[in-house]
Image (cartoon, rainbow, N blue to C red; front, top):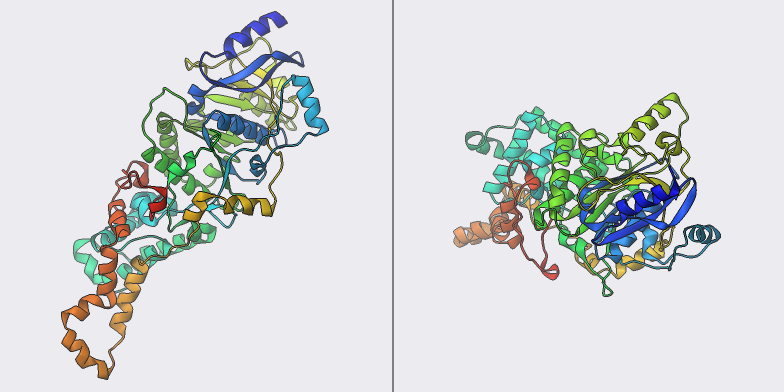
Amino acid sequence: MSIEQFSQEIQNQYKFSGNSINLGFAIFNKEIQKNLAVNIPLSTINRHGLIAGATGTGKTKTIQRFAEALSEKGVNVLLMDIKGDVSGIAKPGAFNPKLQERLSQMGASWTPTQYPTELLSISNEKGVRLRATVSEFGPILFSKILELNENQEGAVTIVFKYCDDNKLPLLDIKDFRAALQHLAEGEGKKEIEKNYGSISSATSGVIMRKLLEVEMQGGDKFFGEKSFEVEDLLQKSSDGKAFINILRLIDIQDKPKLFSSFMLCLLAEIYNKFPEQGDKGEPRLVIFIDEAHLIFKEASKTLLQQLETIIKLIRSKGVGIFFCTQSPADIPDSILGQLGAKFQHALRAFTAKDRKDIKLVSENFPITAFYQTDQIITELGIGEAFITVLSEKGNPTALVHTIISPPQSRMDILSESEQEEIVANSEIAKVYNEFIDRQSAYEILSGKINSEETEPEEDNKEEIKNKGKEVDEESGFGKSLKAVANSSVTKTIVKELTRGLFGVLFGTSSRKGSSRRKKSQGFF
């Protein structure tokens, strides 16, 4: 095919009437076509996408430049940073010989730029702490996280229901553990048999072990208050750029259960809180999930089904999700089929299986007369990719070999002091990094046990007797229960305890329009 035919095809396929983002420039016969821009329309970014390729082929830098372009267009970004190599987006880039050579080849302009950035964390990494309470998950989703069977799930439901009826807030794991022990082994055992059903010691033991597993993966830091408001992902800077939220997950690679649970909770809460906008308009938030195979690693079948459901639904809320991984095979077929845009960096063919996989990947792209896809896919250079996106009409565009535009921010990590500076200057860090351990199920039940085990001193018996009911109501368990029952936290949490079949997935949030400075509870 001639260069004229190729040029006409690309111009027709990648020139859009609405707002779009430039990804790079087309390559034909190994030559960069400086006049053939490869763009993606903003209106179809919420149809999700895949960024795949072997290690070292430039996937992360593709994400970095894509995120920069979205920020420039006023679209917020949430970026899962597994390897810790995209935090440099908060600082301007610097010229170097390789960058200069790339820009000369492309004939593109380049300006060192830093982008408004928030660093987030669900572990010990520096950043704004993201938390959620146990009650906000609901009994069904909490059971799925623990990978419990039907009988064990029933026991969890009993714990939630009992705590609901008795106004015992379940904020963190120690709250749930205390409530479970109280009902399975303590004085609550007889109390629940009539109205709720019993919890066997064997069932309780299994749940306790599952709780320990989650704690060892960092769940003790994730569950608790203050819970995160997803609206805070939508900050804008004074110059109109949207904030890029970088969730630092360097120490989460060996904790797939916590990561997949966190992702489901986050996506579900975004779905609950963001207003419906259908298929029209530009996205409000784009989520990039690097090393996406970690979400699906060791995830239960039920968890995968819920992820698939929320990914199908969330695009109507103006949210796009881009999975980044080494091979498309890392993504379940049911989810892979939902992804509209595809960025395929180089794949390596070292074995017969590799060659077979490459052939299968090639066959999933639109048919093209301009490239021998299965051959070129092994020859792509660093920062090059085969690209196809959805047009404004929702049709896949022609496959094009593309040289990706380089990031304008720093293509390296931030130093420790730079990370600390960003967190120190963060307005939302001041809200969420304050540690709170409110009086909840653990404290209330512990107070009840202690008050029952402790006999009053002889000298105080007469005084206690004279105070009568007033003392009973204002001391020990009564005082704790009364204080918590009347708190705004409890009123919110009690509503969250029975959120329905899928917990946060299809529940309705009880917090509407709360300001940042008034937050005392929230959740993903």
